[in-house]
Length: 74
Image 1 (spheres, rainbow, N blue to C red):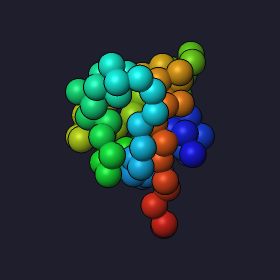
Image 2: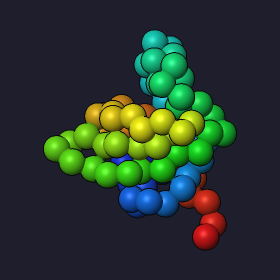
Image 3: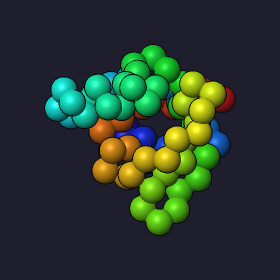
Image 4: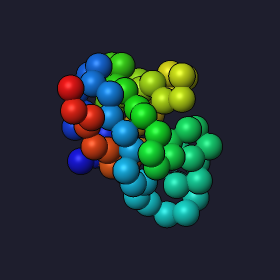
């Protein structure tokens, strides 16, 4: 499922990044790579704040829709 559907505070891992090469490269430079853990901190104003690789990053929902995740079992 896309990152935009993740619940706040639930740790997930990235299973795929969709989009053109330059978009995937941009997200990879921010730390969004396959197999990495990601947690949604908050959502506001059409943007999301997420925690990835011990850094908080704000991304738009359009970018977050390109990041496919699987939520980890509790």
